[in-house]
Image (cartoon, rainbow, N blue to C red; front, side):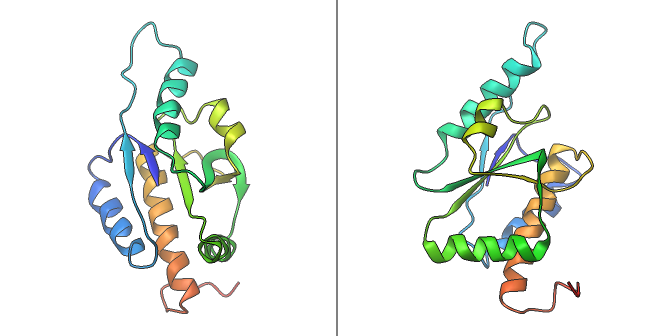
Length: 153
C-alpha cells in the first residue's frame, strides 16, 4: 500500500490496527510519501502531479497497480478477496495507490492496471486508508473461511 501522508488522530490507531491484522494474511508493506505543501501558487493539478510522482517512484517492478479513486470500479468484498488470491497465486503482488486530499494524477490513472473505489461517497484520505486496510484484513479472513465476514453473498 502506497499512501500520501501519514494518518492522523483520531483514525491513526484504527489504521495501524487493521494494517497489522491484514499483515497476518498478506505480505503487506505500507509506504507513506510526503504530502505536497499547500502554496498559493500551486494548482490542484500540480499538487496531484507531485504527490503522484512520489507514489509512482516507490512502486516495485512487476506488480499490479491498483489506483484507488472515486471513479473506479466498485467491488464486493468477495470479489476483492478472489482478486487478491489470484494475484498472490501468480506471485505478482499488488500496489494500492492512495492519493492525497486532491486524489491521484491523470498519469497514475492511465498507468494503473485497475481503478477501484471504496465507496460511492467521497471519503477523507485517512478514512479511505482505514477502509482499505480493513478490506485487506477481511479478504484474508474470507479466503481462510474465518468467521469475521458475516455477509451471505
